[in-house]
Image (cartoon, rainbow, N blue to C red):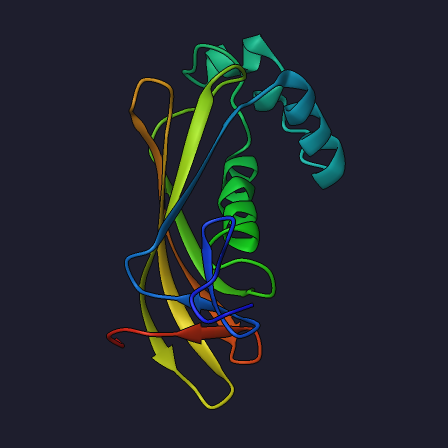
Length: 160
């Protein structure tokens, strides 16, 4: 690869992924019942609020909710595959769930690279995330720190 080459919208310096604060990435998906059921099986979170109308109504919701951690994993997936991408290490995160998400909702997750701190063998990147439903309503916000190994990433721009 040549300096500045783009692969699927990504820039590289040699073999390392080049990141600059201000970069964004987004992904959208419509959540299905099969995905929610699979998530419950995979995680063991079989809380009836995610499966039964009666429980959801008693809790004040129109119908069963999508797991918050399912939505959070959409953020993690975007960060692990797009921004920053392969080889990043999730160090810390916090998420605020703003409004309910239901099966059939289409959720768009956006991630922003905000800033970084240089360390000896890595960078500690600060990222923000937001999720919106098909009506443009915000359903979640989040902040995370990602460890970016210098063997895989090079970061340019203003530091924290």
